[in-house]
Image 1 (cartoon, each protein chain N blue to C red):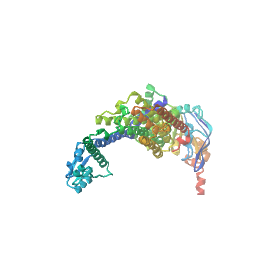
Image 2: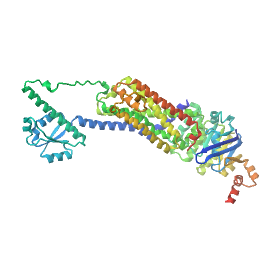
Image 3: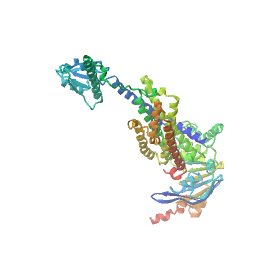
Length: 390
Length: 250
């Protein structure tokens, strides 16, 4: 009962604190929207062929390769008067690639062996993409040429492709076309579960010590356990809401892009799996944050400690973002690594393939660590040296 | 009634070692009387009051507050006291009314009883003009009045005032002194900690002089003066704490 009174007061105070509303709610939404819009811009740039602005030195635009390039969707052929002018176009970004076929390219090609120069800039991703586009066009022309040779010798065209790969996508519909989101969203959820509480926790105990309000609270007949419980639960709620704000950010961004994403296709099992991972994580984070704030003498000291602690959170969260490249994402030990396991587990939940063993192990680890923090907090609350040190 | 026997508290400082903040302090405060804890800064007054209000635990000794043992009945002790300090310690993002509502609930008041209690302290301390303003926006004097209102909201029989006029202007200090006098008239037990002689002379029926954590003298202001053979409380205090002899050696 008393814990609920403390909880209500803490929530009311936090919601009136601009640092909390901005830090825990506005920032995650804003950052996610901005990041996704930015990634979307890059993605559209690549897929819609904005990268493939290819300059051809005058005379080469009628070559078989240039004709082949024109047939590729999104590639745009520009004509440069000479090589120097083409390099100028590369330098000022008007073209991403320059092709110089030389004067006798067509004759060489008809003779069976031809070569042309492709100028590109390996330090520019768009230039490298344009080079790959040209290689696709060249492959197409080479293949067509080979087919003609086969036909003229009454040989089957299948000789060219004796083996064919038939790709079958096993990803669930939830995951289709969501690679970027899948690497980003779990990371953001984990990160904001921590940083949401970061914005307010130093005020909750260290700040109260500094202002003397903690002492007035200790003077009331409420038990110290109830005071800690009320404050901890309020902090946990802020961490949870901040974490879910990241999801809201993705939804908003999706609505702005007028396209549906996996989030709208999440089934109840997926939502349950996500909550089953986020809630224990929040219990642990709120415990760690609150323990640090209880231990610190004042807000400044609390913020210094918390900044150090944030790196401990940041590194595994970041690693979970990149774990797909390491090949250890299915390793058993991973299920027991705090924070990292949540990032990996969330990815699975969004993919529609929640790993219940991982969810259980990860939840147990986070709850156990959270419980240790809570015990430490309750012990600190009983110690004069901690509460009276200002 | 507050009864203190041989109360002690030692702090451990990594640099200075053991510090005896309070050393075997004994005194008694009675209902309808104001007991003054008189001492210089760092004498041990606040530590004594913090032990009596169960915010910190005593090292040794015994004390009862309102008949409740400070070691074993801390919840009952806290429910029987009101504590006002020089630091107003209010929540800046809550209004005065919300602060009172919060603490009223923590003291177990609810509904109509809580509303009546807030109305009572509002009338008593004339808070209505600023009660609905955020505490951050209040002047120091207004904050102190809300702070007092918070301390007496549950109508405790025992009140501790720890240098309540610190940092206040003359008018606000005067209002607080009058309020403390009214507490005596209501039959409450008041312990008033200060280092300002004029406040002791005006308010206190009994005085306990604390210096270096120990009780140096106690009695009525008149008794202290006669014991030390001086004609003012200030001189009596200086005499009791041995200030003159130290001044000569300097």
